Image 1 (cartoon, one colour):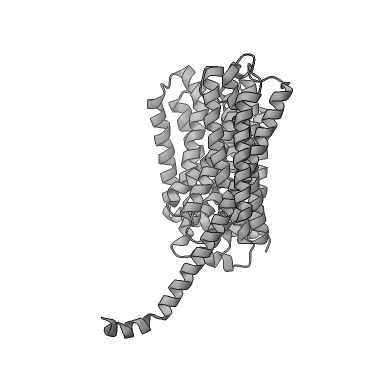
Image 2 (tube, helix red, strand yellow; image 1 turned 60 degrees about the horizontal axis):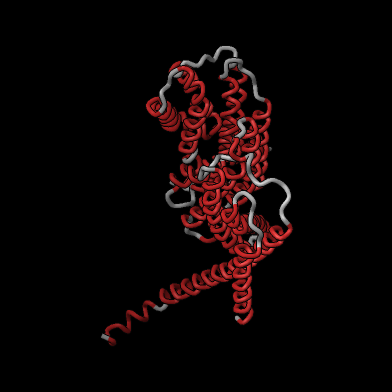
Length: 224
Length: 241
């Protein structure tokens, strides 16, 4: 079985698990909405202001939501020691990690697809004409978040206070991703929307660097 | 033991000379005068901190490659010293910046990068404290150590790109090129002294880690032995009481 086939089986398993409970997605979306609403209290969301703060706010909401949402992807396996069962399967450790990454990407992407339109209505930012380019930025940014986040979920699952540990590990690592994603989104929300190639390239580079690193460390992460 | 004592004395003398050189031998700076002398400890603390983080990275990679716990001891020792030196740099920087730039802190590329770096390695040390089992702790923290080190150039690049788009005027008055030769020599001496201090502390910290490991093994040995001998102890207890 190739890595891609094995990963898709893991992905199906994760999706089925989520579809049965739906607790992760609902929780994530509601949490991100709460962050967006709380920001409107912290900063006055008049039109010019929201253009300036909007992209940052949106990505902070995604980052916080992601750092909470990614935690169960490994911790969930622990209650019944199902990670041991996965390890017994004749597939590479990277396939397990990759399957989980894909599942987390889908969960976060669904949350973002719901959140972005709501955000554009609440903060009066027009999305017409930039949807395609915004999708590109969202996909690249979310990929980076999910790649690093899934690896760190695997690390923090073994520590005490693991719910707190994941954001502590993940958020500082994501600092460059946050800058790039916010700047790329800001250039799309501007009066003359344009895709900032520098930042999009940077996001892609971030994804590639951490994807390669995850591939290299996957054996250490899933073993024992 | 004798070697360690000699090394400690030598490093103490070096540090004393470095302090003397920085305060009395280095020439007065034209615009900043005395304030500038903090530079002779600020720059060395950065070189110590970056060298220590690099050693921690090497230790993490070597541990993952060889699975010898000695590399893990090296990684944690270096990370701790790196955080200490980094803290020193982050404290001496604002002390200088307030009189020179008029602000304690500015979100410049270099400052932000080191701040994030400091946070990353504090997270690394926290993570180590929160994983119980030694083997797993070594592996997982090494994985995080590799990720953290990979992140550093990305943080720096992102800040460079970002800040060149919004230049911060306060930095442009900073140190230009060309250092007075005496200043250069004093700075070089200070860097060497602080690096020697770092190596000395690193060796000691590494020894401490290996002693801790030894102690853990002895404790486990005692526990297994006391479990084995428990029935005997229960048998004896009526006699002793």
